[in-house]
Amino acid sequence: MRAPIASALAAALLLWAAGCPEPLDGADGGPATAGPAGRPPMVDSHVHLLPSPRALARALALFDQVGVTRFCAKSAGVPGSGRYRATLAVQRRLGERFAFFVNPDWDGFGQPGWLEREVGRLEVAARDGARGVKIFKALGLSVRDPEGRLVPVDDPRLDPWFEAAGRLGLIVAIHTADPLTFFDPPGPRNERHLELLFAPNWSFAGEGLPSKAELLAQRDRRLARHPGTTFLGIHLANSPEDLGYVDRLLDARPNLLVDTSARVPEFGRHPPAEVRAFFLEHQARILFGTDIVIDEDSYQLGSLSIWPDEDQDAVRFFQAHRDFFETERRGLRHPTPIQGAWTVDGIGLPREALDRIYRQNAERLIWKVR
Ligand SMILES: [Zn+2]
Image 1 (cartoon, rainbow, N blue to C red):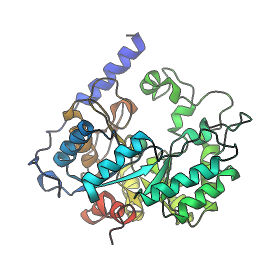
Image 2 (spheres, protein in one colour):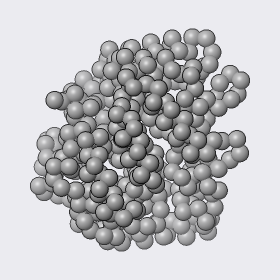
Image 3 (cartoon, helix red, strand yellow):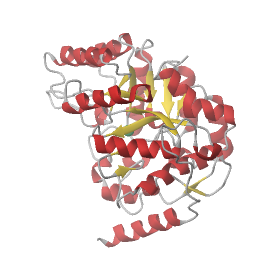
């Protein structure tokens, strides 16, 4: 192991071990209907589940233990694919406890037939019960047209596709850009050094790539162009570093909601009174989500895993979220230590706002619960 990796790992491990609260109890078998130990139930609106029997069994055991009553898979794959068919089987088995979003296939974008093919797949997805479609960060950063040019998020050739999603009632979950520091040069002075060491392809500091500000501007023009399409700006609209920006965007775009996934470490760094005020003001349009990845034998807990995450780590991951949203404790270990060696301060939301963000907003938006 290289020395910088070893020292950065050691720092992250120390932080992880510091102040780990007692584990959650309350696992009593059977589907969760409430949170553990009297805590409120959660809906995880943003998970990535490998649709295999073994991964599903692990997911259900975890969610029952931590009080997740429903969950939404954001990577059901391309309609017609094996992953998609396996996700439909999960849907048949779990019914209303589960929902899924499909993904577009950029292969052949800009060539004749791409639009018809992909709109056709959206129609299949809607017919099969998909609640939305999720766009990964590739759009804007790596998808290229036949001439080799990067395809901007607001490329007009995509307009009919976004309109079709809206017409079909599919929510568009959109991931544009990434943490601000991924656009700074990697290296020991980058505050996400550890993460970039293990995922060097997450660095977008290279030449020829748009800046984060440019990517968000492309995304925001896209939101403005389709008032009839509902967008879910995942990762707090990818601007957790600037809550004022998200505040103004939510005010300007009534067709936008946001989720909290994988960004507690980032928005949790701001003064807790400011974060609390933001969450209270927008409590009807924020969905709780974690971005947990559940595979056959592993998890990813808000980012890539650099050591094998055990079941107990996944339980602590949810507990760290609860500690942040439900308590006003200062200096909390955040859910995903690889994202940076700092702590966050709990925002202690009142029960009513908590229930909206944890559960009601997702049930209304994704499950159409009235
Ligand atoms: Zn995700």
